[in-house]
Structure formats: structure tokens, C-alpha cells
Amino acid sequence: MLEAFSDRDLIPLTRVELDITEPARVRDAIAELSPSAIINCAAFNDVDGAEDEVQAAFAVNAFGVRSLAFAAERTGATLFHFSTDFVFDGCTSKPYRESDRPSPKSIYAESKLLGEWFALSAPRAFVLRVESLFGCSRDWSRRRGTLDSLVARMEAGETVPVFTDRVVSPSRLSDVATATRHLLDTDAESGLYHCVNAGRATWREVAEEVARQLDLTPRLTPITVDQVTLRAERPVFCALDNAKLTEAGFEMPSWSDAVTQWLAAR
Ligand SMILES: NC(=O)c1ccc[n+]([C@@H]2O[C@H](COP(=O)([O-])OP(=O)(O)OC[C@H]3O[C@@H](n4cnc5c(N)ncnc54)[C@H](OP(=O)(O)O)[C@@H]3O)[C@@H](O)[C@H]2O)c1
Image 1 (tube, rainbow, N blue to C red):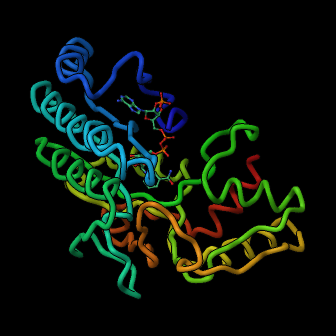
Image 2 (tube, rainbow, N blue to C red):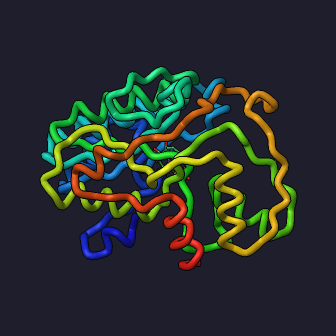
């Protein structure tokens, strides 16, 4: 995110510097900074933990966003907020469009959906649904996310379990940041956008493509979603259609091209 805005006066704030669950602090901080845009990357992202920590999940993912939306309204700032494919139930075989009806299946997903609605109550707001973020850090030792750890484990020669039925549209972080910048700089219509790399694949297909690009012979153990018991239910089919973002003038690269660029940039 920082690179896409390197020519702008960007003020990154940590949780210690601005806890978004404290409405008065959010109000005062935004009033004092008077930014032209607020980019909310804060989230309660422990999908399974949210089932037990309902209040904490809603405090960050929903009511924290409401405070930011109020602050954006008061100061005239454009609000950017990130949401998730998990707002859908995954009971489809066609990539979801923004107009498709959400049907969250977990506390995390419910809290994120409410956060979307609060964000969109600001006069100028963009909610970007992302999924399976990868390439999260230029510092390779801080790799995170399913795809990042998949690459690390394959390169270490480990046997990696991969879902053969979960369908995803991975999102490279730098592409999401560039799309965010595009929406800020243009007169794009505010609203909800699916901001994922183009295309879709099962995790096994992703793993096989990454192995091909790295010229590795992968050791993959195929598994299906119903073989794994997790505290929170996740959608099986999570692919998102990003045509609306393309219509707004920003074309996300295909996920395999995004992987190529990311691997080359390491
Ligand atoms: N990662 C994915 O694959 C994925 C998929 C779908 C959607 N998303 C969405 O994309 C966005 C970014 O996700 P991410 O994976 O980059 O997130 P992340 O790495 O988990 O970072 C979340 C950040 O939020 C901060 N935070 C938590 N509570 C806060 C609070 N009360 N006030 C201020 N900051 C707080 C955390 O600070 P601490 O480090 O101090 O805890 C952390 O820096 C989120 O909206 C997420 O829901 C991500």
C-alpha cells in the first residue's frame, strides 16, 4: 500500500496510534489530520477466533468502520475499506458479482458485511472485496497468507495439503494497492468493488501453477473441504468477478501473471 501512495503524504497509523474501536479517538484524530482519504486496513481477521470473540470482531470489523465513516463524513474524506469473499455462502459455481446477495456463514463474515454497510454510509466510500491476499511483504522472511506459505513450503520440499474443491481468485497486495490508488485518482463511482486478480482456480491448481513457475516438482496432498473441521464455516466457491473494477478503468492482471510478477520481484 505504501508504494502505491509514495508520492502522497501518507500517514500510516498502527493500532497503538489509533485504535479504531475508540470512537472519540477516531473522531479527534481524523479531525486533526483532516485527510483527503482514509484507507482502512485494520481488521479482526481471526476467522475461527471470531466465533468466540463476537464482540471483539464486531467492534473492529463493523463499529470501528462506522466511526471511520462518521469521521469521513465530517471531514469530507473519501473512505476506502477492505472486505472479503466470505460474505458469500459459496453455494454457486459462477464468480460472484457485486450485485449478488451476500449470505455470511460465520461471525467474521457477518461482522465484515456490517462493516461494508457502515463504510458505504459515508458520502464517498469504496469497499473493495479482496480474497487470499498474497505478496504481503517485500521482506520475504515475513511471508504471510496461504499462497505465501504455500510457496515457502514447496520451496522447502515439504508435502503440502491443497484443497481440490475450494475455488478462489487470489489477490496480489500490490495490485490491490494500485487499484485503490486508481479509484482515488479518478472520478470512479463510489460503492462496492470486487478487487481480485482475474480468473479463478482451486488451491491445487494454484499450487501446480506456482510449482511450474518455480520449476519445482511439488509434493501435494489433495484434500477436500469436508475433510477438514474448522470452527467457522467457510465458503467452498469463493471466486469473485472483477468486471465492475475493469469498467471503472482498472484491469487487474490474471492471478497467474500476478504470481509471476510477485515471484520475479522477490
Ligand atoms: N488476508 C487475506 O487473505 C484477506 C482475505 C479477505 C479479506 N481481507 C481483508 O483485507 C484487509 C487487510 O487484511 P490483512 O490480512 O492485511 O490484515 P492483517 O494483516 O490481519 O492486519 C490487520 C491490521 O489491523 C490492525 N488492527 C486490529 N485491530 C485494530 C484496531 N482495533 N484498531 C486499529 N488497528 C487494528 C492489526 O494490528 P495488530 O498487528 O496490532 O493486531 C493489523 O495491523 C482486512 O479488512 C481483511 O478483512 C484479507
